[in-house]
Length: 131
Image (cartoon, rainbow, N blue to C red; front, side, top):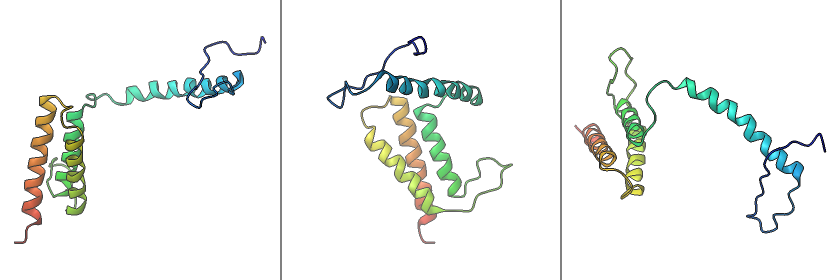
């Protein structure tokens, strides 16, 4: 008993029985969570930039799509080759995101998503239309 680890016990009662879990199983369940916490704290200092928000996520996807359509967002970076198929996939992904988040966004988030989709769609139509 002196060897047994002290702490809280996690019991999963979703399966119905719930009593099949032994204290040794709960101790093994507790260990991965403890080992995961150092890695999560170690990853925090690696991201000194702004926190990821819905708007920054939309802007990131939109920027990727623009780059795939030949936009050079950073003049010091070499332009990527145009890939309209991948750009369209990102536009479609943002469209699904707009549909699935309808009614759950702030007005600012909704504006960012709507404006980004409009700009991407107009650029895509311009590039995809026959000349």
